[in-house]
Image (cartoon, rainbow, N blue to C red):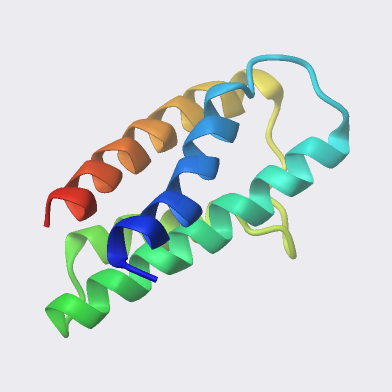
Length: 103
């Protein structure tokens, strides 16, 4: 698989799921969202470390996202607290998508 196709498979689903979180879904959706965002964050951390060979700001940001969205020890916040976090996270993912795609 090429880098661009991997980007499409790992990052785009996270972006799409994060952008629809303002709709009321059953709790299972949010567990699935946490799983997808955590895996996508881990993928971006891996790609960045593989390329840079050191800890960068991007790696730190996605480590925080990965910890915040982890499905194993979930962070419990209200819906009104999660919505801005989801929007900011989707913007970060969109930026990373274009950064990786254009690299």
